[in-house]
Picture 1: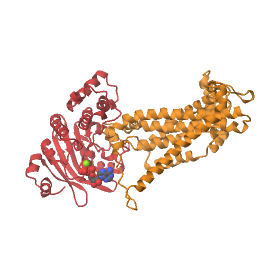
Picture 2: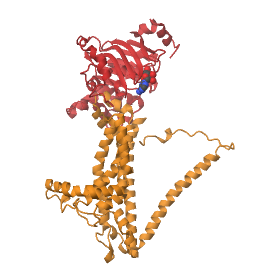
Picture 3: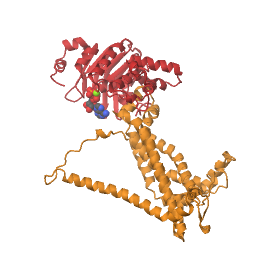
Picture 4: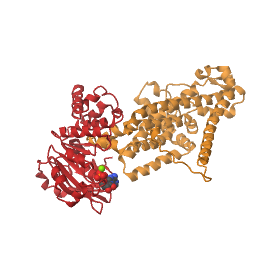
Length: 285
Length: 326
Ligand SMILES: Nc1ncnc2c1ncn2[C@@H]1O[C@H](COP(=O)(O)OP(=O)(O)O)[C@@H](O)[C@H]1O
Ligand SMILES: [Mg+2]
């Protein structure tokens, strides 16, 4: 539950307070800019000192062994991390030119600018396919005329390459679809709020190879108008879909840090850090 | 939630008996379990049989007219059960009408809003409420609630809704409204406890999916948590209804115990459970006893009917909300 919605925990305020004066000159050149980001679960620090600038309309992969903090990292970009009880964040994150951890920033507003696709497909089971896609736009308050909503649902199902498969069963429960279709439904649902940034947390890890292939294909198409950050533990996937890759690794203290961030091709062929090389050649992780 | 598909139940590891016979304890356990299961069924069947046998007299005398008869007059050997059925059903439904929104509201507060320690403290208090013996609640009803209803609430209702049949008649304090309120107090803990547990088991992924779309915490509760939990919440309401239908002591103390059917909630009424408790010792002749036992049979029937209906309802909604799990 989001208990921080109305009143951000002191820790957040503290972390963001010094940024006040500097917050004005936010570089809009990057779609997402992460500065010295750290995140805790209670007393346990999960990631530390991560800085990244993500260019607009690119696909960036976040790779690293399981448990190194990849999910934590991208959840910080959506202000979803703080939803976990006891969780807090330090450092700064800009989405476009919005300083999302600034004291005055409403997490609800941040989350409607940023879309999230989760590891396990999680359509709303009591809603139809149509209602799943319409769920986000319907949160925007004012009633949308039926015709406009129909268009919006169709457009986003098409963007998620699902329309042809579901156009005759828009009224069926979203959970009746196959796993791969459910995940594309979740992508359509996330796209329907027109996010500038789409975060995907191992979106294919629960899917079969064909569904995986379709979603990878889809990502490349979407990158034309959305900035995508995808967490994956599959290095082939990272090299297939992304232009940029960030490699995160947990140290002996169990805290995840950014080891290397570079163009995907560069990182996979000429890694600068020996740990990156060890990881991509399969020597650990 | 009823979401676990049978095939996903973990396979029982093979039990190895002390004597090497792999399945001896297994078979013994199964036999014992079966025996107890059969025993429960047999007990219910025996109960029904005894009640039917006991009420043969009244059944033969009044037939179906027993259910529709509005006169209950032991002196004239006339027995009609409708006033009791009416009193039971109306007081229970009234209780549900009051207790469901309150119980659900408290559960939402406990799960979705309150910090952990506050939530725990309130949960304990609510469970304490369920532990109060109903005779004490009845006493409180007589000495505190009924006078308050009579002097303050009922005149106010009549002033606000003049001429509305629901609130007509002299404000006695005792009556259907008092019974409904007492019952509501008794079933709120049931509804709170179960809906709280059901809401707490809604997968985090469902909440986060809604939050990630830009929903406020309240929107997340209303659009993701509550729909997902609907079948369980219905179950909570059903259990509450079951308790309200059968509750005797506290209701007997505040309902007025008059076998009349009136549209007004301020009028005294009578329930099936209450008449059984009140008149069993006075039943001086066979037909009287027989009529009372038939009332018991009807109460049993209504309880079962409500439960089955509710279970069907729960199953229908469970089918919808169970699908997202896979
Ligand atoms: N809800 C949580 N509570 C406590 N610790 C957590 C929680 N979620 C993740 N962690 C810890 O944070 C670290 C990073 O987790 P995560 O970001 O999920 O890693 P990844 O996605 O790279 O597998 C792990 O060590 C994990 O144990
Ligand atoms: Mg992860």
